[in-house]
Length: 103
Image (cartoon, rainbow, N blue to C red):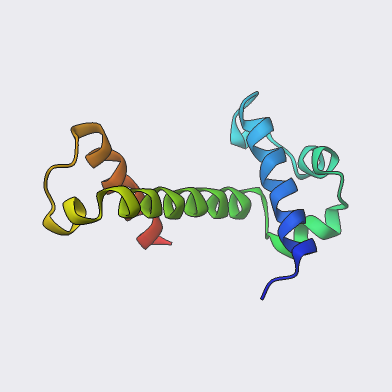
C-alpha cells in the first residue's frame, strides 16, 4: 500500500504539470516551475520521476487507464462484443487501449 503522503505529493506534481500544460508546451516546462507550483523540492520531484517526460508519460498512462475503466464500466458488454460503441467513443477507446497497453 502506498503512503498517503506519496499519493498527495504525486497529485500535487501532476496538478502542477496540467496547470502548466494549459499555458505552454511540454518542451518549455521546467522542473523548477513544477516544483514551485507543487510546493515541493527538486529532490522530491526526482524521488518520484526521472524527468518531466517520465511525469508526462505517467500522467497519460493514468488517464488512459481511467478512460478504459470508465468505458469498461458503462460499455462492458459492447466492449466484449466489439460493437455498439458510438463512433467518437470507439476512437477514444482504441487510443486508450493502445496508450495503456504500450506502457
